[in-house]
Every structure is written in structure tokens, then in C-alpha cells.
Amino acid sequence: MTKRTVNEMDLSGKRVFMRVDYNVPMAEQDGSMVINDSTRIEATLPTLEFLMEKGAKIILAAHLGRPKGKNEPSMSLRPVASKLADMVGRPVAFIDDCLGEKVEKTIEILQPGDILLLENVRFYAEEEANDDEFSRKLANLADCYINDAFGAAHRAHASTAGIAKYIAEKGGQCGAGLLMQKELQFLGTELAEPESPFVVILGGAKVSDKIKVIDQLLEKADTILIGGAMAYTFKLSQGLKVGKSLVEPDKTDLATKALKKAEEKGVQFLIPTDNIIAIPVITEKLNKKGKPIMEFQSPRTNSEENIPDDAEGVDIGPDTVARYKKIISEAKTILCNGPMGIFEDPRFSNGTFEVAKAVVEATQKHGAKSIIGGGDSVKALNQSGLGDQVTFMSTGGGASLEFLEGKDLPGIMALDEI
Ligand code: AMP
View (tube, rainbow, N blue to C red):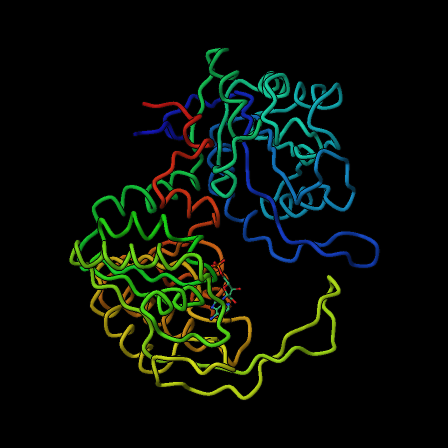
């Protein structure tokens, strides 16, 4: 499957509709919305600079939050337009709609290299419904289509999938932006035939979220290292005690199957042998949703494989950290997805950060290729200032998981095959 990219597109003087992922975290400050983290905007700059250099007329479309088909002022993309203008060092036009006369008139006067950002596409319910007529109307705004929004590529929406059919119908080209191309290269090509030893590190909350990824990776990995809460479902499947740890008792059969497959395939499959545990206590404090806040008391290392009845496993223990670090240091290819513990609490972040450091060291000192599969792993690496020291960090959470599961993502399938 080779998809067209911007490198194989005729862009000069063309009206280019580019779908980007500008779903940035925002917060209200003195009555207006302020962007807290502009990483996603920054990630689109290489493609934008490429398009400006080619003299394309750039029409950007994105979603922000979940307005559910309604015009929700707090979810307007207007603040993104001014942030983007600062970043590219030139004006960025903004229209408070993504269809209609104002949009059409503005596009008519766009000059090569100009940028227009449309309003949140999800203000139209037709976007998420992948409505045909809406897709056709979006396609009418442009000559060609670029998808650079990997983070939204697992959704079959009008601006991520539907539009491509109508651009193609007019004889227009549909291709991947440079960010999307990189995602396809690292999550796809590089992992198709990984250099051995290929070590996969999986953590996070649930086995059920990642079981399909585990199943796929068991075909290629030499070693799989398990951490996070999902380790406890594996422990439970082996008849071990997990105390009050977060588990999915109805998923132990999936865990057993994965362990059996690992044995058949000769994949080393490791779960933690020691853990940091703490006593969960329900307090009288309430969270934003009005639910009681849980506090962890008396954290300590538990070197037993069984977890005491009153305790919860919250991180991997020091022996497990040491064992995982040694294996990571010998890897040539590393894929990492999900934290080793409740890393948001500094008392339980050691496992996640030590593993992250080991991944960085393997990359920097031993030339390993390290790919971070999005979501909380990226957050953890950035928090420790190590984000730029791995080979690649995916910008997609759900999208990268579905891609690694081997699913066809609608946003990628819609692009031209070359
Ligand atoms: P995921 O989105 O599946 O990668 O899960 C990330 C979340 O898993 C983070 O918010 C972590 O706090 C949480 N997590 C990791 N380890 C544990 C654990 N031992 N118990 C409860 N939650 C955990």
C-alpha cells in the first residue's frame, strides 16, 4: 500500500483543502479561550511550509472538542488562527464557518502561499455523520485534498474521508501531508520488518484496549514487557492475587490466550514480579463530576507476586524496573505504548520514567530505533523532557492503536494509491 504524499502532488496555484489536527487543549482565561499546548499546531508546520513554498492556496479544516453539531463558542478555532499566524510569521485568515458565501469569497481572493483556517467542522452534525452532501460541498471549495491529521484518521468523517471521493471525482489528487507520511513510515514501514531484538513495552489501564495490538505484535516481537494496570489482569489469569488493583476479571481469558500464543511463537512475555502498592482510601472530597476522590496511602514496595487484599498495585517495582531496563538496553527496535503505573502521581511515576530513560539511552547510545505509540507515553516523555530523544513519537492516540492493530484507517484509505 503506497499512498500519494504531498511530494507527488501538483500544488502550484492550487486550492488545497488540508485536514489538520488542531484539537488543542484550551482553557478560559479572563473571558477568552487560551491555548495551553500548541504541539499539534507545530506538528503541521513542515507541511504548511512545503505548501507555501509550492505556492498553494491553503484552506485548513479541523475539529476542536465535541460540539456535537452545534455552534459552541468555547470550541471555536479562532484562537488557533492567531497562534498559527505567530508560528508561520504571516497572517492567517479565519472565517467563522466552513461553508457558505463568506468562505467562498475569501477563497476566491487567496493568493499563492496564503492560509485560511475554517471554523470547527464539527459545528456541523454532517461532519461526524460523514454526510455525502456535506462532503461534496467541502470538496467544491478546493482542487485537491491533503490529510495531515493522523490523530483523526481512524474516524470516517466528512473532512477526514468523505471529501476525498468528491475531490477525486473532479480529477483532483488526494495525498498525505508530511506529518501523516511520517506516521505511516514509522508505525507502518519501520515496524513491518523491525530489526531484532524487537522489544515492545505495553502499559496503561486496560487489557481490553490493547489486546488486539498485543495479538498483532506477538507475530513480530522478540520480547513484550507488560506494565500498568493491565499487568494485573495477566496476574489474575495466572491465579495470582491482585488485591484492589484495577483489573478486568472478565478479560482473563484474553490474557491467557495471549500468554499461550507468546509461548507458541517463542516470544518472551514478561509481567511485573514486584510492584509499588498503596492503600486506596475514599475521601470526602469530591471531583468535578461530584464523585468522591480516592487517595493512596502508605505506598511501599511489594516484592511478592501476590498483592495483599487491602492494597492496589500502582507502579512496577524496582526489580521489574531493573529487569525491563536490561532488556531495553539490548533492543534494536522499541515500540512503547502506555505508562507503567499511575504516573500522574509523582509517587508512582518511577517505573514509567525509568523505562522512558532506558528507551532514550538505547536510542542515543546503542542506535536503537524507538517508536512511541502516542497517548500517555508521549505525555510522560515530554514531562521528563526526553521527547526529542527518541526516534519518533506518534501524534495519534486512538489512531495509532488502531493502526498497530492492523486496521485500515478511513482517513488513510481515502487517499490516492500510487
Ligand atoms: P491508557 O490510556 O490505556 O494508556 O492508560 C493510561 C492510564 O493508565 C493513565 O492515566 C495511568 O494513570 C493509568 N494506569 C497505569 N497504571 C495503572 C495502575 N497500576 N492502576 C491504575 N491505573 C493505572
